[in-house]
Image (cartoon, rainbow, N blue to C red; front, side, top):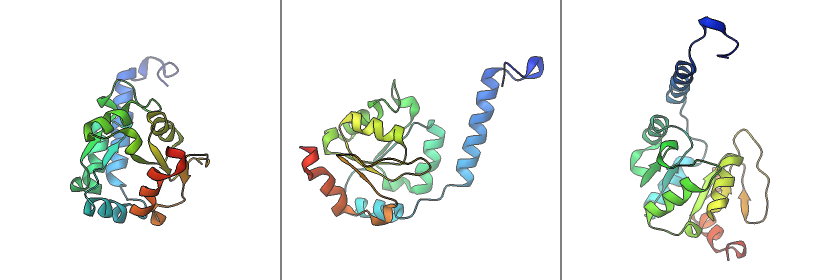
Length: 166
């Protein structure tokens, strides 16, 4: 856009800032937890299972989502600025597991994008995929559901003890 806009076009930095501001405003206005998310987060909290938001979004966007979902429901958050490499690299999930003091193989990651799934699998985590806009295929070692309404603590525990994890 900048190259084709001629002299009247904003510089690339201003364009990026404007797009980021518009994206954050949309997120802030339209945060609606997907079906099953609040219940599952409450089950995890009641069982004292540490949880984290691990995102490739900027910190200010992660903080909006964190607040909307309930800050008390999460042990920590990781945003794009928090690791040298972001998804699909495993770095964000490895950093979150380290910060939680657990082996990545003892973590279940709930993801909604192929990029996030790739990052979690590269980190050695069990994956529960709940696709949002792009399909995610079922493969060995990965569970795919159409909704978190079908997920509970028992299912998450089974993902850690399945034969594919050993």
